Amino acid sequence: MQALLGADYPAFERSLCEAPPVSVRVNDKVPLAPSADRVPWCGAGYYLAQRPVFTLDPLLHGGAYYVQEASSMFLAQAVGQHFPQAARVLDLCAAPGGKSTLLAQCLPDTSLLVSNEVIRSRAAILAENMAKWGNANTLVTNNKPADFAALPGWFDVLVVDAPCSGEGMFRKDVQAVDEWSPRNVDMCAARQCDILREAWPALKPGGVLVYSTCTYNRQENEDNVAWTCRELGAERLSIDLKGRTDIVETEGGYHFYPHRTRGEGFFLSVMRKWEDAPLPRPSKPARFKGVREQPWRGALPLPLRAGREWAALCDGDRVTAYPADLKEDMRLAEKTWHVVQAGVSLGRTKGRDFVPDAAAALSKALDSGAVASVEVDGETAIAYLRRDNLTLPDAPKGYVLVRYRGLPLGWVKNLGNRCNNLYPQEWRIRMR
Ligand code: SAM
Image (cartoon, rainbow, N blue to C red; front, side):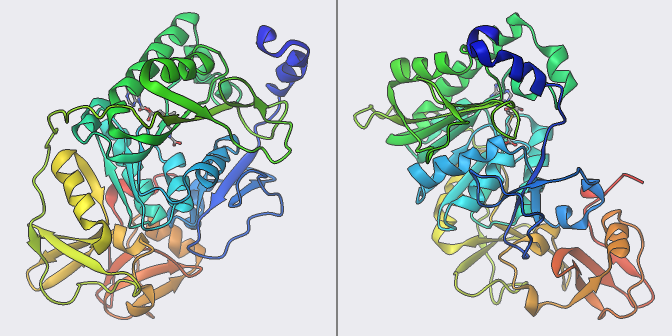
């Protein structure tokens, strides 16, 4: 770091002993302005004066905001300046979902966002966070980078927020300090090249690559950008910093340092794949899962917002609604990759009943004014999110949407004298 920063080094070292700033990025589900202290490079980002117990805030569980380190919100600038209208975007290393929820927020809802995570348990957390964020134009996959070569040139944008040595996380995450070694840096750099090379065929010629890490060293940043440009065939694109001098531009990209900007260490680079890059032949699709073939007949089992056409399909008893304009793309993805979640999961038919899914309650596509709902106070909301038994004497009978400050949290089946709590077991709050 002394070699990289020169005279700036003592200030950097001091900043490592300071408390990391707390920041969130707000969704557009309910009006929310958590502070007057805005993250300068992301319109939806806010700093908080203190760290609340986020787990005990129902608004977090309802997807009203996402807790995200401020520097990484710089991705919003890459979207706005280089691909504001991209049709298909692949976020390759997406769990737990910070960059993907940001992409969902910045892209138009006619774009298709594929959020992928290779580790299965982390893909489940990603799916949970994406469901809570609530965009219908997204799907979550659990695949290896090489699996995306099955559809060469399919994506307009590839985001690789690579697994890295985490030097920028040292003051937030002690484990990152313990795990650091020169050998680990070498291993991370080599793995990052593997990931880029394997997924590269999926990006169309002329398409945009965003490469980011939360580390400082040249090997994982500048060297890998140079390698990508030289070996894979790309040119670097610049981001207009709009006069900011605290973000440091090098020949490889943009660095965030904790002594210069309010956030953790972060590096981001944008590249364009050569227009004349050859398209390789498709590799064999992974084909993990069957396709949902049966169209749903009649009216949708849950009301979805007008202004968009929906195509509902059944897979056994499960009913999923796809935005009609994205249905073909989503079904092709389901044939090709291991899709964990796509479109809006509406629920399950059970005899003559329809049991709605939590994802439908949390989806921005639900016409929530057209379903039975009940507003609860903070304490009841937490009890609901813990999956405790509730009695809601003022609520209508049957399936009822539970709201806190207007924000949908999930469903109960109100039987009158008690409610069946339909909040997913695996999402429940365990903290007491
Ligand atoms: N983009 C995420 C966000 O903003 O919330 C953070 C991603 S984290 C820096 C890197 C991710 O890459 C991890 O979820 C990790 O499981 C995944 N990963 C690890 N090894 C990988 C590999 N060989 N190929 C692809 N992804 C990998």
